[in-house]
Image (cartoon, rainbow, N blue to C red; front, side):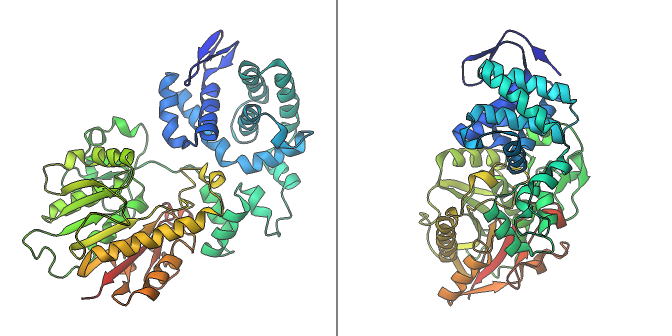
Length: 469
């Protein structure tokens, strides 16, 4: 592991002075960006790794250290609370970040005890002060006295308690409660354990532009377009670099596939192959797969995205598909009030903004960022987007409603609300369109719910609704 003495430039400007282990400093900067800037770790990591010019081995260490620390923060805070003589809220935030990094090395990584402690103390000294370094040294020596299992036995509630999973599996209480309702008590611990395993990278070959045979990796079990990357960087794959393939969870691939497989009578009756709309298109992964599928049928996809910066990401994802006929355009607009003619779309995708509690494997900080109060605002938005999508459909057209969340208020609750308020919509069996996916019955008959512990995907919810002829 590389260690540099002297002065090291930090990403936001300023320098740290004294000996500091650069991969650990990089992980520290990721935690700071998440805490201060509300950044997502998986998005900020590449920039931080590039800033410090880390080689592959050090980059992998930084990624595991930062992501693992965020993932297990709840457990580590319980451990640190037992080792600190004051509430953690009284510990300086950047010192607490360093302590969490040190705890992860001691309890979950193959780092020798002396190296985990000394490098963390150096990090605190370089970014704080000498007094804080001594404090960190004392605390981490206490942490090192037990392994992770022993600490969980000491600080977690009784295993039979409803509150045990919060500490043992590092999830906030309200998240545990919502997931328990969604998956059931018998499978709760398996789901929480799966949330704490970093996902493998999945690639998608965009039909007509690439084949999955040219992608390195093992074919995904359910999507005919996916592979699980067996090693290396996705950016080094030619088809990915050229925009003919992309990085996309298999669950997201299945959402697009469900919309494309649905039967729509007399599609393209005005002479084209069909009008498809992605109503919440950013950042563009599903839009790119849908556009490729549409192009093969002579149809075209219109991508709608409210946020300009996300619309630019959609444009980047669709760049290779321009000129194929599969892309009708990109509109920067609110999906609740899109500037589109009602009753003209054959297929609409609503991949709705949600709590993201189905993607905690890849975005571990989301579990600490989201709050129960977020649910009401999100559910109202989801209902409005779904109603808008139905208005866009011509009679006989279909909408797929999807969330990367299994929370019942965001899934069955939203669909039920629509069905109760509209007589021109019927819920159809989306599972029949994806017969290759086992054990995926959703909370409403005909809906589908994927799970990380069952299917190795994000916990995607999928419903298919048709506007009555």
